[in-house]
Length: 257
Image 1 (cartoon, rainbow, N blue to C red):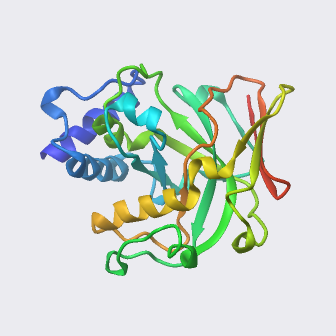
Image 2 (image 1 turned 135 degrees about the horizontal axis):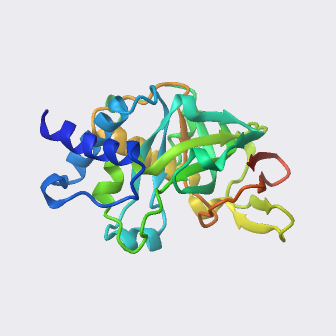
């Protein structure tokens, strides 16, 4: 077993034995971000969760980055079998430390390839098929948030445990994402409001694309990329009914049992 396989297997063993998240030991700590992403690919391949259907951004906010001692986001994969449509119901007992995030998901209209050069929020628009509201299901395995190493988190696939997609936003090309409001409805609590621009969805999309392409990867047509939460991650409980709305355009809904 080579070093990449050894690191990935350590992380998979943690999952399989339902251990609380812990940082990798020094002997297995990746030597840098390049090695960490190589381990992540091995983790994805060996996880028995199937092929990838998309990608995610994590640690998008400065506060989260400072917590992990880095100055940039990280990326992870979304397994195709874990992309669900709204409304969806989940059993809390199926997860080891479940959190929800509230995002915009982008579906790509074309392959993105390394030879296409770098992307920004403007030139990547031509490769977008649709935008949708989405929940991300985070599996943090009851991590101690005061002691999270970013390299370890990358090898752990940035904690992605799936997403739920709402219906596509109509005529997204004509929408001004800087002015659209979103709203979180959690049971009978007062609504929580946020601006879509707080997660800079097209900037997040281009960041993920540039990172993956810099590692020589092609992002296939139809891939779903989620672009960061506009509201703080929250852990649901049994009986929760949660709706995340993007303006009056679309919504995504889940129940926890």
